[in-house]
Amino acid sequence: MISVYIISLKESQRRLDTEKLVSESNEKFKGRCVFQIFDAISPKHEDFEKFVQELYDAQSMLKSDWFHSDWCCGELLPQEFGCYLSHYLLWKECVKSNQPVVILEDDVTLESHFMQALEDCLKSPFDFVKLFGWYWNFHKTNLHTLPLERDAVESVGETPIEDHVKTEAPETPIENHEVTPPNPARDTQQDFIIETQQDPKELSEPCKIAPQKISFNQVVFKKIKRKLNHFIGSILARTEVYKKLTGKYDELTGKYDELTGKYDELTGKYDELTGKYDELTGKYDELTGKYESLLAKEANIKETFWERRADSEEEAFFLEHFYLTSVYVASTAGYYITPKGAKTFIEATERFKIIEPVDMFINNPTYHDIATLTYLPLPVSLNKHCKISTIQNLKKSDISLIGPKKSYFDNLFYDQLNTRKCLKAFHKYSRRYAPLKTPKEV
Image 1 (cartoon, helix red, strand yellow):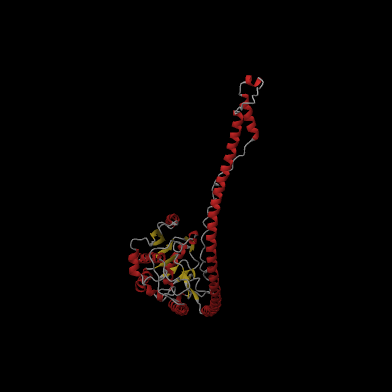
Image 2 (tube, one colour):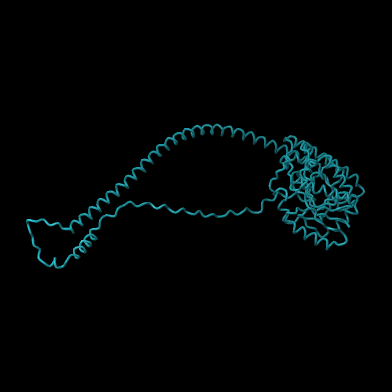
């Protein structure tokens, strides 16, 4: 029975679906093949840095077509390195068992003719067959046998931003220094109460006026005293409020004068910066014009290059289902490999080091002498998990695999070199498998 390995990260959200696929497939294909999970290598692996020291060489990246393409941002991501390592270790497992194996990634779904495709691969003389693939986006092509590589999937929705309602700060109560003016009605009422508290007998008797004596009326005195107290209190309260307001006014006046000085100073600096800004704006407009001119030249050069490249594209079928092309076929979502193919890939990896993503390495005839064929119709398709990359969407690792500096002209040179190289490899493999070629119009 042939072994089918599915590469999956332990902590991945895909894990449960992968375990379900393994269980269902082992039941469905019982006695014909065995499905099992291979724990993917991530930058958290205990031996990851050891693998980096053994299998990574920054200067060797200058040999990589991928490194000189527009797709490469100047470094190999640690997650890409870990993905390559996972395939590399499974190649070793294939050589150790001395039996062909199928290697899948955990974002795939098996089509109904998967087992038929596997049987066709086992009967064929081919050492490596992709079960899924697409034309690489960054190598334009006029071919239509395979789909174009999917565009980068945008993040699924934006994280909703909570609507934080601003809590208004309670207003600071303003101290009320205003004094309530005297109330004549209330004072008259109080006087009446005081007068009625006197002895009624005294009031009933007629008043005897003694001109020679001056009497002191307590009621009148209390009224005068109370009114004076009200008046003096009101004056004092208003005087205190006035003093406080005057103090605050003087303080604010000082601050205003200080701010006026700073404003004049800032106005001077602003005028100076405005002059410099106008000068820089002029230089920016000049550089923008030069940049647009260079972009137009670049577009013209690339257009000419891709037109010439498209004229040299070729493709062919062998044994009806095995597709060979001179164009890069990306993705390692699923493939069949023999011990011979695995051994060749291992030796090439150890010789050239891990300097690019594994699917780019497999397609490059510079590294090895294994034909890259694709089985059609594709027996493997992608599931919903392909929309969320386990490589591009992870947090940045502490480990850096930055490559050497590259130039734009080197990119064009390597594109042209790669075109000739892939076309030469296509002709070589076409001659090798000529007796198996299918006389079928593509």
